[in-house]
Image (tube, rainbow, N blue to C red; front, side, top):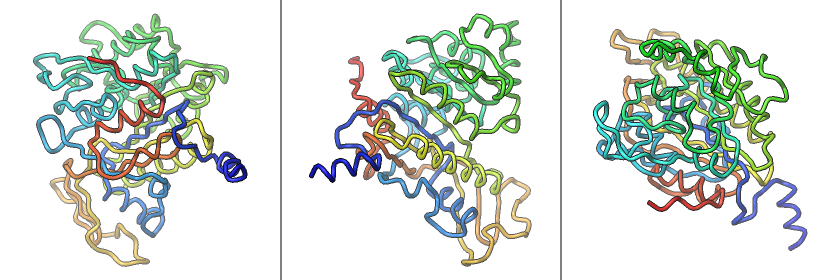
Length: 367
């Protein structure tokens, strides 16, 4: 028995009931089951070759909202990080919110719980840092398009000292929104308590807090950004919470699948780096996307050379078809590390929040 226990510890297998010191939540935006399948076929020539598909704990999550069967990123991510459903377009506010018209109840996020408990927190994304998915971790607005209000809330946290590491694109859109209020990112950041950097290389090796904003996703490396974030957050002996978003929308089929492969490699690298009994690693999607593999032969390229794109933006290839819309079927939840065993079977997307809270050993505030 003792030998078996030592072997499990040596392999980095968490013991049942052990609490997590860190949680890394990977969110594949629009990364449904069909997208994962197609990415494996495109990148590896075989199904089931993604790291995500080898993770030991797998479940399926419903993504419906408080009012609709098909979710956007705002409602989908709100459910994941707060444990409550809301309406499309609403960011971490309750279903009593009316988009663009009325604020709803403020929903406390897993990132805010982490700040309250003294952990370091980070958000890394290859989409606008004030877009719905990252915003849902730290902001509370009735309209996902209110970039100015979202950015200001990032600088005025409700708990702790706010996000320690924020890396991603979107600088022009945020500055444009702030300009309507005679403000700018650079101006607001001067008193924000976090240095603002325009490159990953500019972040000092001993940094514990940093904001790096870029014009576009092409201006930085997402894999490098994730590793820099982990290095900074790991300096906190209390632990950390990190959310990493990768855009898996396949409106451009090949580009979307290539980004899916990139995020899968990031998850693999992160799992190898944090292969211990302290870190829960989770992957899920906020919603699915209407892409399907509907043909093809083993040994043939998944995406043939023929012109599959159509004038209306859809795609009709020999093996793949794509309609530019979100869809409502369940998405994968995959996990490893302490608390990962709670991921199994079908579940509502709100359950993912509770899985993270239980992994940390925290109780949800009573209403």
